[in-house]
Image 1: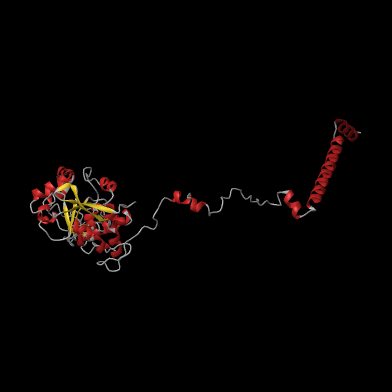
Image 2: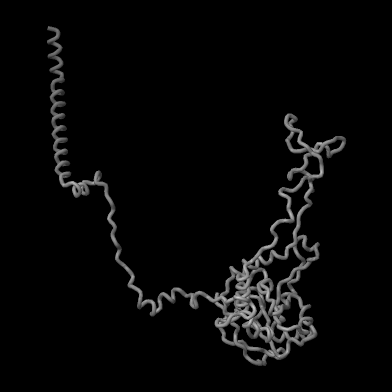
Length: 377
């Protein structure tokens, strides 16, 4: 996928969508390769790390002194409850197919609940998610309503961190077209399907924009109660928030300070990160991935060899025992030998025909009658 390619980003005043305070250079992290496969893998494993262990009681379904009746009583050999005088006596027990029995392969709390993920993979996934947030097509494909947003990435300055009231925060976001996405979130609130509605997670709703800030400020309390809107410190960017569900392209609103801090956190193509030890910003293996255009370019075509069009004919091996022509090449006498055989065969056939004809002449009716008369005389 293609990352953002603009050299600078506009910094808007938080109280006027038409007023551009300045322009900031695009941080290098937004040019990182967008790898949905890495993001999905890391998100799947990270999401498992907040699970709590669950299991059935270790003795559930096994709290009876059942024993099998053995063979010879015309019943199955499953263990049966002892005693008499009640319906329970004689009932099958213990098995997963029995009423009141244990489950098959009872769950245990020592299951492998959590997953370790390579640190470099986690960092790569965060870079990919940030790069995808600057591509409007990916943000819209994720379901965000950004048709009225002036620019992506959206950077707000001019003291937005000092907003202390939720009403002021809503008015500020509405000036930049963010209210459309917030309304989508509000309208999406529905009762959860399944038993989760009984377990203190009754409602579900879509995800809205993510606000990234750099310093602790009143804005945290002003925006924290807006439905669907999440807030995160730029030093604690989390893939679970940058790509919810493992899908890249979250709509992110940056404060100016947080946006300018990205190069020091993730580094650039020339400098390493000041925070992440040993981390080098991932770069695409190819700056231009259009292979057909590369191959057909004049620079490559003038140095490659011309295409080979002639077809090399391969001779098929023939069996000399079945093919006379091949045998003659191997043994020149084979032709004379074959002709001699054919002449001898023809001579044998003619001699045999003469003998048969002679015998048939002797066994004519006249010869038979003469022989008969000779025997009578």
